[in-house]
Length: 60
View 1 (tube, one colour):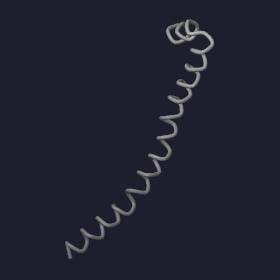
View 2 (cartoon, rainbow, N blue to C red):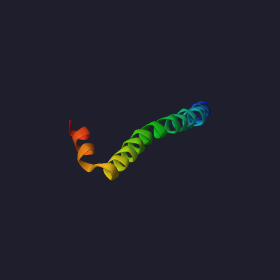
View 3 (cartoon, one colour):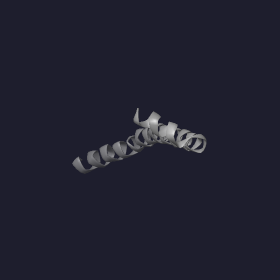
């Protein structure tokens, strides 16, 4: 009986656990990469026009 309860509990946790985890990674990953891409894009765009202004904005 203890083995059966363990397997059901383990199966339930294994079935329920990946759902929230994958959901969190799907939610977190875009938010984690979006600001980086935004900053890189703006930095590259500003670097083309004027490198000094971009450096001043980043520092100041």
